[in-house]
Amino acid sequence: GTSVQQRLIRIRSAQGTELGQALFANSITITPGTVTVETDEEGFIVHALTDESADIDAIGEMGDRVSELEKAA
Image (cartoon, rainbow, N blue to C red; front, side, top):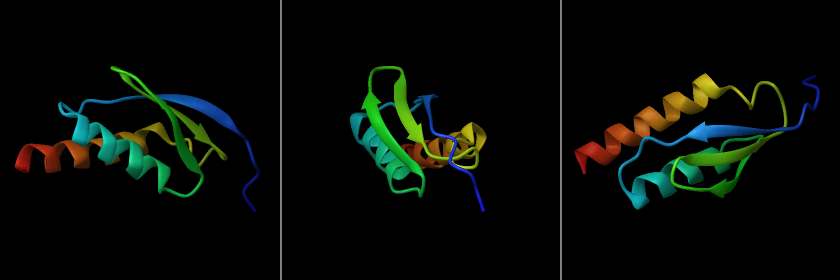
């Protein structure tokens, strides 16, 4: 199984609106093994339970998808 390797990671947020930032932060939180624990102007602090859930590239891709939704709105 996957071993628990808890950590806090910094995720930058490129969204231009509070709604976009909230959607990205909530998307992280509903992803198994991750919880957004703090937000600020630059991004988020995320608690990750495993190496797999701490995949910054995968989280960044999620942020890109949120940004595309934000632009389309």
